[in-house]
Structures are given as C-alpha cells and as structure tokens.
Length: 467
Image 1: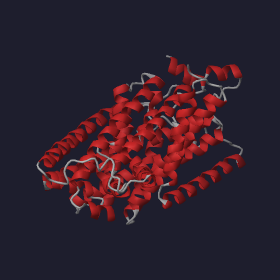
Image 2 (image 1 turned 90 degrees about the vertical axis):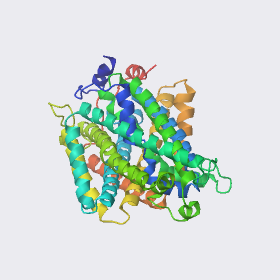
Image 3 (image 1 turned 45 degrees about the horizontal axis):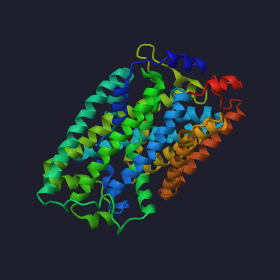
Image 4 (image 1 turned 45 degrees about the vertical axis):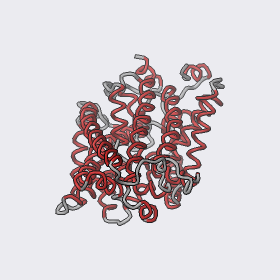
C-alpha cells in the first residue's frame, strides 16, 4: 500500500481505481504512440531528413529515452496523476508547474483533434460520400463512450487495436522485404540511416522535430500512476519499454519504406502525405496501399485517440483538483471511477477544433506544429525539475540520473526546438504568453497556484526523495 500512502501524503484521496498492470501500461503507451504512426507522416520526415528517416527516428528515440529517465525519477518522488505538471510544480515551484502544465496541455488537448482529423480525412478518401466532419464526429463519439465505461474497458480495446496494427505492420515488412529481394525499389542500403551527401545535424534535428510526433504519448503512461498496480516503479519501467519497442518498429518500417520510394528525388523536393502508401504499392500493389491507409485511419481514429483522450482527461482532472482549472473537471464518476466531466470536455473540444480544422487546407500542418512545440518545451522543464529537486534541493550524490542525464536530455531537446518550424515556434510563444496571462489572472483573483501536501519541513523534504 506504499503508493496509496504516498498519495495521501500529498493530501489526496485514492479516487481512481487501481487495476492497470505493467503489460497494460506498455500496451497503453504503444497504442498512444501507434506502432504504425510513421505511415501518416513518412513523406514529411523523409523530405526534411534528406532521405534519412531512420536516422531521424533513431535520434528521436535516444532523445526521448533521456526524457523517459527523467519521468521515472520524478514519478518516484511524486506518484500522482498530472505528469509533468505535478513534477515541475512540486520539483521547482507551483507557478512553474502551472506553466508547464499549460504547455503540455497544448499537446494533450490538440493531439486528439489532429488524430481524429487525419483519420477522418483517410476515411473520406475511401468513402467520399461521408464528409470529413461526419467521420470525425463518429470517431469522437465511439471513443468517448468507451472511455466513460472505465479504464479497464479502454485497456482491453487498446490491446485488440495494437494486435491489429502489428499484424498490418508485419504484413508490410514481409511484402516489402520480399519486394526488395526481388529487385524492386532501390535495393538494400544504409542510406535511410546515413547519407553523406545530405547529412547535417540541423537537417536531422529539423526532421526529428517532426518525427517526435510519432513518439508523443509515451509520457501519457505517467498519467496512470494512480491506477497502476505497481506504482511509480512500474510506470517508469513501462515508459522505457514502450519507447524502445516503438522506436525499433518505427526505424525498421521507415527504413524499408525509404528503400521502396518510387521517386526519391521528387519526394525530397515535394513531400507527400501518401508517400508511405506509394511505397507500399511498389512492394505489393494497390491492395497493400489500401490496407496500410485503412490501418492508419482506424489506428489514429480509434486506438490512438482513445488513449489520448484518457491522458488529457487525467491532466485536466489533476489541475482541477488543485483549483488551477474549474472544479467541475475534478468530478469522478462513482460508478466507473473515471474523470467523466474532463472526458466530456475533451470530447467537445475535439469536435469543435477538429471540425474547424477540417475546413482549412493547412489544418493538419497547423495542429502538428502546435503539438510538437508544446511537448518539447514541457519536456525541457521536466529535465530541469529533476536537477532542481534532486541535485540542488536535496544534494543528491547520484550524478548521472539527477544531473548529467537530465542536462543531456534538455540539451538535445533545446536543439530540436531551435531547429523546429518557425510557425511552430511563433505559435508556441503565443500559447506561452496566453498561459502567463491566465497565471496573472489567478494571482489577481487571489488564487495563486498551490499544490496539496507540499512538504513543509526539511525532514519531510528528505523523506520525499526516493532511495
């Protein structure tokens, strides 16, 4: 009962139902990241990386493994829902936690909108008689009903979708490798991993800033720490396992697809949203194109959005119970032990923003830019939280996990942000300014950010640091 005692130590009651094991957490993380996520953004990553998508995903995985290590450290100290919002708020200061939660909120709120939109567009391409907005509403409604039924229902359906995605991925890899053996495509080579003619670190990190979209979601595992049967240790292990598994799958599939691209020069000059499906058609014909595109629609529209809705609802719940968002968002369903009001709000936002973006020609690009920049900034603050909480505040002698690794992780992410799309940087700055205005309003109203159960004395501070 150690984890429950830790929750009570911070002034909270155990309201969310425990019952999520290690395998469930790993499947949840994989579902959030989507094992076939590169299908949808392969063309952009290929072009921005100079034809080296495997390298972009490899660098992205390494960078986020450092981030996962920092998450593991902070979830040990603060085993609470709310993810980086709680870690920055308790590890540094409540106002910093609010602003970090505000930045990651940009990621969590808009991720479902982007996923629904991509899935709806894909389904509209297959069934044009049904408009994009209608497909979007259907996907939102199905996921909301499932998530309102409780976390166990979500986990069960997540496993089914993961198996489906892995079957489709295995099919593509088998057909693709056989096609390469038969002489199709450009043949086997290391060029998707390293091409001296196009290599430069700014090019690679610009591609990483897009590729990390496929990895976003591993951090959502930390949202379930209050529902995990093994507490913080189990959550940290699940995050690392999910990241490595997803990273290996991403690297292998983009490597094979890059070797099958029908017109490499044309794709470098003009990125295409259908580049992966074009590569699949080279390998197996039109039937494989349709299988991979349909799998993308179902995976993004059901599996990924289902767990994305879970994650953002837990973040809203955590911030609301600390009175930093309206209190109705902290309402937990007595019957199903889920934050029902937060789930319904995410549903409404997804429909509103998704339908609006479906009317814009740049809707997908605009949402992607906003999502990535918010997450990267929040992850940088997470690394700083580890250093402040463990090394500065408590004088930890464990230099690697509490100082060196966070510095390396933050440095890589800063470089990614610097090389990100200019529009993403501008929109991220606008969102940051809006957050500062909200924070100032809270102070004017006499409700400055405050977290329950913040340790008060040096002895309690020392005990809050895990061994």
